Image 1 (cartoon, helix red, strand yellow):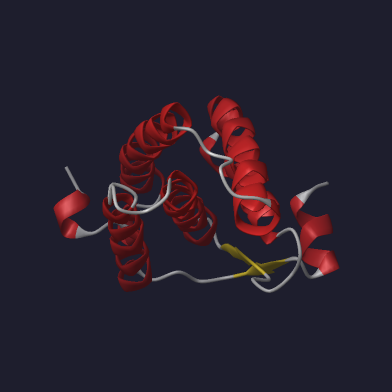
Image 2 (cartoon, rainbow, N blue to C red):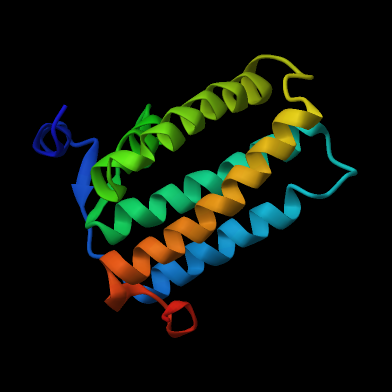
Amino acid sequence: MLLRDWLASGDLQQWSATREELDRLFEIAGRDLTDAAVSDLSLDRRFATAYEAALVLATIVLRASGYRTRGSSSGHHWLTFALLPEFMGPGAEPRSRYLQACRRKRHQATYERAGVATQIELRELVSEVKSFQHEVSNWLRTAHPGLASPQEKP
């Protein structure tokens, strides 16, 4: 579907992000990455928390680009990840596919059964999210410099 189709369906809405809003979202993503390292939690919960950090980072991209999903709608996680290549370019397609797979795994671990995530999958996701965090920060400085925090600017 095209952006105009998502807007017409109401699943995507136009949005004017602020630097303060995006700063808060970066803080949430950082908190979630820190929480994903808490070894007293189950692997499933840690995986879900790292996943949440990825979702927040993808939300930063969406909002900086002038959009937001209808948060309570079914499929808003899917749409947020699906739109990454639209805004970050075709190089974001592999990450989009990877995060969609993580979305499905997180869904299983949260709603279907325990013991879904492995230590290897958790490490891989945390590494991917840290890389994504760096890329989103760089992308924001380049694509939307007015929305990047002063500490994030070159």
